[in-house]
Length: 161
Image (tube, rainbow, N blue to C red; front, side, top):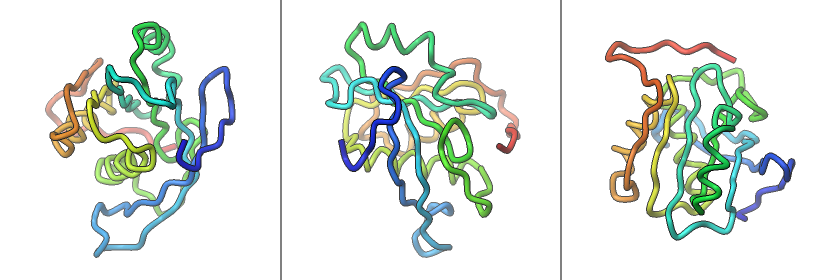
């Protein structure tokens, strides 16, 4: 584990500081650090790949409670993201909670966890936008994308925490 602390073994929750540029550009704005809480079912990794699960708004890693056991039984690692201000992840008043911030946050968490290949992005509701964008932005690492109850083609406005 890369500087992560287990906070709930039963739920497989871990906490780690995540540094990221909310604007997605290190030349615009300042870098922020917040305490992220995420679910990790196989911290040592899986040869079968890793599902990075992005929740809707509102939502949390708990949105995956019915899928997680099945993926675990199959030997697939699942990282249940809790976006800033959701689940147990810290929120910061200067965050806008838009897709750029959400994607940059997930990529920073992925880097912290050393996720480099065989990634499947899975998104629910508003998180589907992010799953699609993340799979396109990380095409060389991505083997698939799963969208559950995705949004329509219009821009979706999620709830703020």
